[in-house]
Length: 262
Image (spheres, one colour):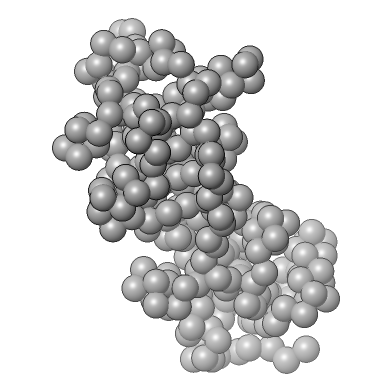
């Protein structure tokens, strides 16, 4: 199999460009890096345009070698690279020797999503990715990405999401009117807000509902506050608030608990 030995290779440059939001949007593609993430996307039914791998790493990692063989056998372009070339497209300090370029997922949204999560100006990639992972695990039917939220196909968000992007319907919204267009007016909307007297476990989450999560630093945005009823997580001691990922996970799994007992 021919080996890519130059960082100026067109396929390498194209993949590397997907680390930038503008290029991801223009190409309708994203770059996945790492064995777990590429495998999760593949098992979820995503079909890469191509994969890149380091043969020397595959020789010492049977799971990686098996995945490369499986994807190659399905007719996906599989490009071997030297470690130095692979490092040039990697976003991590210690690359795992496999990456994939694939179309940005656009899963169909269910007509009745049950529980909708809105990320309101969540700017931290780790928080955003963790929330997507928690949302998928808790059975959220649709995630809406409100203005000022980080691009969820940022490499750091993809890693934190651990494959949730390929199993969860996501919609990026240019403004709050677009956010509202995805919602049924009959669905109650709750906004996470530490100052609320209503607590998250007093809400009936067994009905269709919407949860809006803002950033820890800024809290809910003005449009979010206008849309829904505030709900808080009561806390003891001197802790004033949880970060967005922690707060969202607590509320989402309370909703999941109630729904299991329906």
